[in-house]
Image 1 (tube, rainbow, N blue to C red):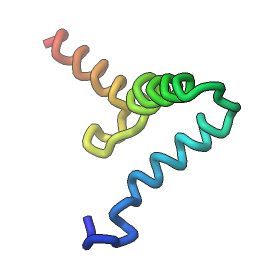
Image 2: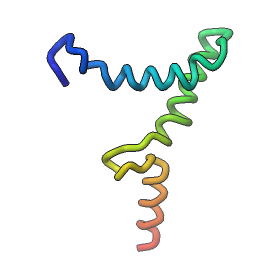
Image 3: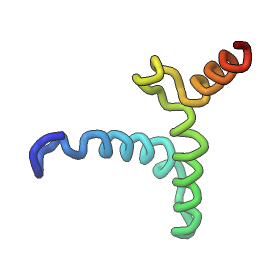
Image 4: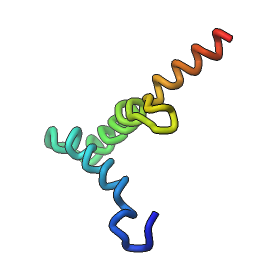
Length: 76
């Protein structure tokens, strides 16, 4: 995005990390690295990615967009 070492280079990653930290990491103590790793994977793949809104889909979550698109395609 910007030149090397610019503060905007990491803006998206920092935003995603802060959301995950607030909604998952800070909610409990994690017994093992494996528990934490599994929880992070579950949070990203089962909660965050399917539900986050995208500008490219008209601000629909991926699951909603696919459901709408699949319904339209089968109706035609």
